[in-house]
Length: 397
Image (cartoon, rainbow, N blue to C red):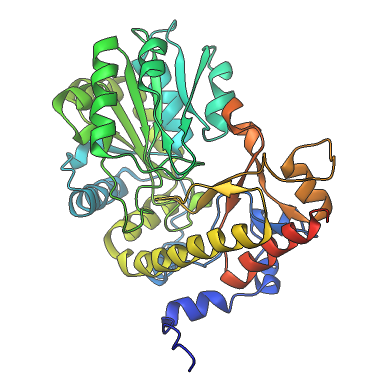
């Protein structure tokens, strides 16, 4: 007797039906940069645009709302983001302390310039989002890498190493959920981290851009919501750009959780607000206020994809392993145990050359990422299956 298969939702069926041909025709960066390969590199999703966002953008374009960012658009975005934080994460932050910037990296540079001394170093937990590795040098700052502890089935913080690495005036970059490893930090972990930061007299830049993309087996805790002490030493950055695939509209939010930082921003940083765009502010506003149904469908689909990916890695990549991500749509696959037949390059280079699959090089995420690949699994399930099967077929023997 055949076992009945679980019924797929209409949204899942629609996502499954998106073809390579359609995606190449759309011409996103992900699909156009390497036209003869299957892409799983840059953090873009392949699921189109939420209908409420598309409608509001069409209205803005009809009204020629494509000039400089009007100040009148900002309060609605700030309120929508504040309401989203309160409902989804239980974090009650003043709307007026949520300000627009072009992207999370603009927020990071502003934090370095405005809230740390010139001698302050930048401490990064690795593997890390690639720009966190190379950007400190462009700021004239020393980079300190603190590797995570890989336990086989989890990534853990090395609290002793963090304590030894942090000095007064340093900036710790926290990425939560953590790109590229997909870790979602627990409240207990964050509280212990906050105690270290406070004791050492350092600051935190908390990149929470992936916070809406957390699966049911985890819960996102905004770092600045932990305590008054955490709020006093933190600048938070987020955006709707990852969860609703809006990166090209160049809008994010920098969030101040204490009055002193908000006052410094008003005096010295507010000009950065006009690096955001009218269309981006409108799209973020709609995403936070009307985008929950679309996000629910996407998360359900991504959850199925992360299970499918674990199954496919086990079937087709003997010797490789991954820690199941609790958030994001990124998987960090350990390929150090793969037999690449004496290939002298990295696994990323091997799969590009022999499988025509484009991944992100793990070594770009810091020294702890050597031998890993970062894979974006926010793609139709049939395409995900095809690219992992191609990787497996490329292995010798």
